[in-house]
Length: 229
Image 1 (tube, helix red, strand yellow):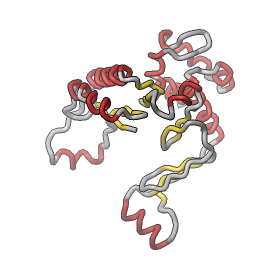
Image 2 (spheres, rainbow, N blue to C red; image 1 turned 90 degrees about the horizontal axis):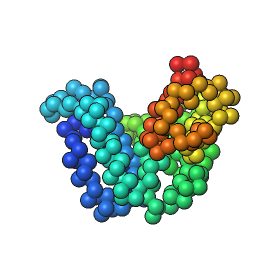
Image 3 (cartoon, rainbow, N blue to C red; image 1 turned 90 degrees about the vertical axis):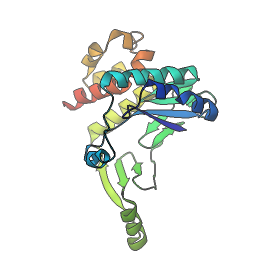
């Protein structure tokens, strides 16, 4: 797999175009395309190395579309949330069969009830909640070597509503359909009326290619509606 980041300071569309050679050379089975996530509390340290101004929203959008077009031309199929799957990889069949499963730690060919992650800062997931290991290496090592237990950064138990929404979100991500029955049961049917018509293909609420690009936004809107945020 390969991770690509767009929206970096001083990055332009020419940099995105330069990815083509590496993508052709390595031909990754999957690609994760992420926008840069600013970390405000590190800004003072970064400023010591010079000015690091992010591209504006319009330029970042252009970068994303340029990257999306490039990946599509190279045979990478967009799964959603910035994940692209190559036809030559083992995840392509689950993608077409709509069984591909996304957990907090990555993509899998079918759903799992439990994911155990062992590294520094890694996040484990069960049907009941999440657990994150300590993100600081020295603390992580000290707790394991001196106390013989996993060094915990934080954990979270899912509420009943969180479990319901997580199942819904994963169903939508795998199938690219907004299930009418689920929307009705969750009392967020009105969400459909707020989605641009060209993001949906038909009356079955099947997402169009454009809709899949904005799947994260759709699910964020559904989450706010469901939890009354």
